[in-house]
Image (tube, rainbow, N blue to C red; front, top):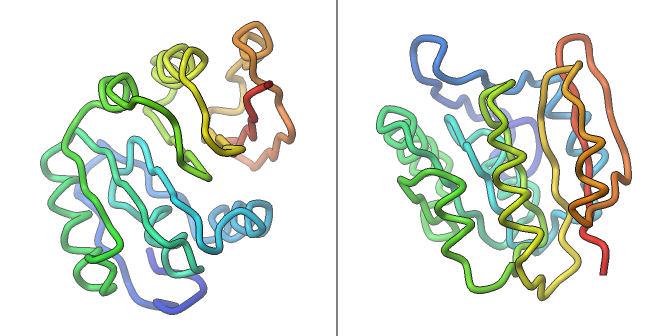
Length: 182
């Protein structure tokens, strides 16, 4: 795994051993950032279920002002710390060892430009995060991106006050792009 573009382009990133995380492939990451590129420069980026931190680091490399990485697994947190140090994004990064739902619940208001989440598939964790977000005040127009299994149903988001603005399907998974209705 590596940083694809920007100031840290081509730098290799560590991943943790085992199947606890599924790093987003370079090809899918490139497609994702082609879609969200207009949101990234100078953005405040939130990477929930951050794994090794590859998505947040890619955002920083492509011009995001700051990134908050939220990850519960201690091995993954250590991996994010190493990757952030290696790519020289320590000053622009905040690494939180916490469960994503609790972290979002603790926010007074949502002031992130982009919220990316890649939770373990088929556990309903993205739905839990969205059920907290639906009741929060958003101070900016936030793009929410969820990486999920291909057969995951997101029809429930409409009842929560979110609109699906785009869906991008790949061979083994998909990205859902949401915005909160005003």
